[in-house]
Image 1 (tube, rainbow, N blue to C red):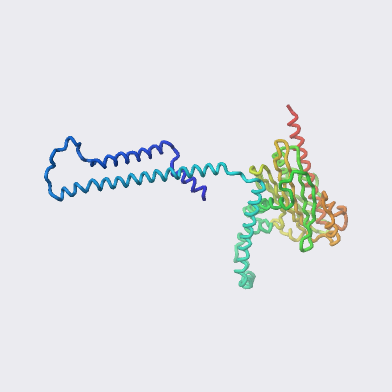
Image 2 (image 1 turned 90 degrees about the vertical axis):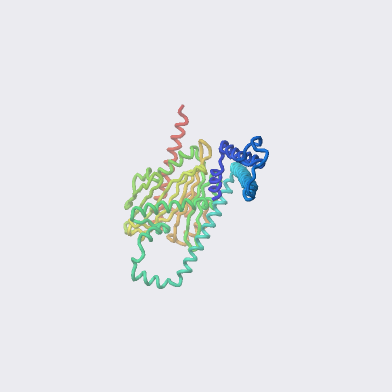
Length: 424
């Protein structure tokens, strides 16, 4: 708002020097004309042409002659004073705008951590405001809950399905309708991208420069596990080279050469920077393991980084029996940050929801394990162990395939960059 007012004022008060000169010339005209009026009327003849004796006239005519000229002078004096005042106001406002513009140009750019703090405060205030709105809505409708449920049971089609589908993405659900589906994919990815910075701060990856590989299990209040897999690496290739290689994996360019028995995989490219994947594997007993996700590529020039985020889809109308199987729950991001012209930092953070599929003994064992390289190392049992449910095995295998594809793509990109640098 302040910027808009400043721009409007800058347009209102001319910056062109010729226009300022014109304004000064008009003021001078008023000044010259009014100075002459103080000594003689505008229409009065020259002094040497006046007769020595004035002709006689009636008393009313003499009175009118004496009062007309002072009135004209008084009016012109007011006009001259008004023009001078306006000129002073214009000059003062012009000086104010110039000083504001200079102050804005010399304003100190906030540090990276200061900007992060501001973003975090804005996110916190937005979350508090949204929470208050939700609580107010719940309190407002609490007394009508029973009646609403009764009406909805009798007439389930009173609410439009499009309204319900348009908000389903908040629960990581995809609609079958093409327009709603694409909108949900973008909305899911954009929300996870907005949460990325806070997650990097909590994981200790933001601003880090030394390499680290860390796997940490986090026991939830309901006794389920969420595994946090965090890495920070320095790679000998430019930011855009490494980021492009990573994105090629998430858009489906690097696919598994062979799928396990009972597995199917499909890829859908929404646009150049958005894609989604669907993977399902069914065992001999008919148990299905679903691992579907959406992925999106972001370029952030202000932070000199490129980011890829992905999020599991928990329900999909195009897969009617998806909720009857086991659904993988995962969120992740990879931020490739510029270090210099020939190297970059790669910050990777991934949260995997293991749920309650593991026994209490394995959960207790995972609590005693830290700083491991992989989820399999953390849980301290072989992948073929009978203690691991079929779905968990399927998800671990698929995660390993994605990890291998990322390594292959990045290594190829680095090798190609080094080859180009070595060529004369």
